Length: 331
Image 1 (spheres, rainbow, N blue to C red):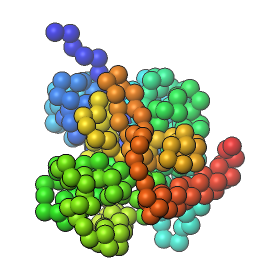
Image 2: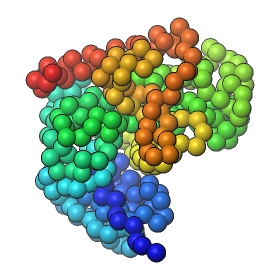
Image 3: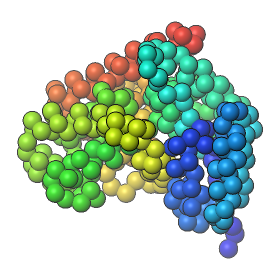
């Protein structure tokens, strides 16, 4: 049997908490399957290189049969060279007293540089998943800085929000999480996101015919999902890492394989579907066909409440775009 060529995966912020939780899962075959070799391009900033060496040593010490090569670098051109997937995990976190505009400006410069390096050095078929926050707008900036990579190959992550929502609903209904499906998180990966319980299902039933308490759904469920990241920081003194890494694995696996029934949430470039402003990176329900092309699922009905929530989240994204593009001199 011919051995498969390795998939080359670049990971930024590779020595950070999410990167650390993610790399061992990629290396073990959980992202691309148990027979798919992987080459890992691990990217860090200079002050993180010692920590990165330690992470690479640990990867070596696992003796993963699927890992063909580990590159460690602070140089973006080497880091993104010939990669098939670029997982942009690293970003500057918001610190006390920092305005959102400051964060957009600081991270914007980072994602301009990464977008340019991907455009210049990655394979033209490279797909890019942005995890570092604010991920939607960071993704938009990288996409606009990467003329050689088609816009359709850029994604940002709301799968963590979807997974959080699925579990909240399963616990409320007293069913296994596998019973809850077709739950789209719309909009921005921020507290304004809308986890769409109206179109979701439990088993084969409409979710709202199983969980009939609409006040709980609107006033408890929606804010719980939106504020979950904050609740985790308050509880453990650090932001979500393992659950975020898990959502990266889920996102890439589901973009890399045909969808089997239902759909999943991922932020993609809008072409105006469901009245979303064109050109934003916004979360919508997505399926993948047998040849690997994704599309936004059509035909979902949205009531006035849902439309209002989605419009508010997309308005926040439009404002982020305006601030970031002004600061960075992008058009």
